[in-house]
Image (cartoon, rainbow, N blue to C red; front, side, top):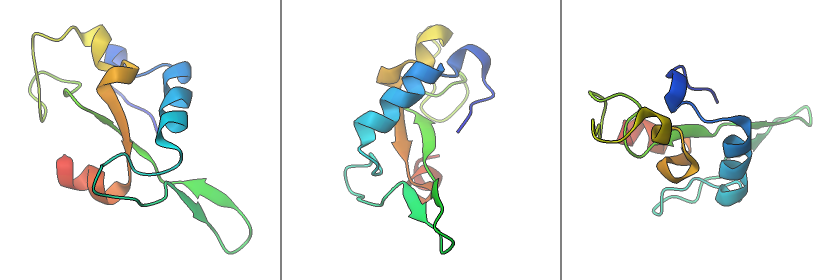
Length: 90
């Protein structure tokens, strides 16, 4: 769950905070999918995908050139989604 967009990428504290806020579920209000999968061999993996509310780039979906780049990676501008919901919004 990384972002290659420099300053729009959240720090590790923000990523932990996102997982805590999600309680392990997709943050799309119409979805309740778990962001963790239990694999047959007893392993659990996360499938969470971080999504920007205002796009990381000015020309991205929901872009807003007036938002400072440093704010684009903030907790308030990020949500965790399941892969299906992330694909639908982006």
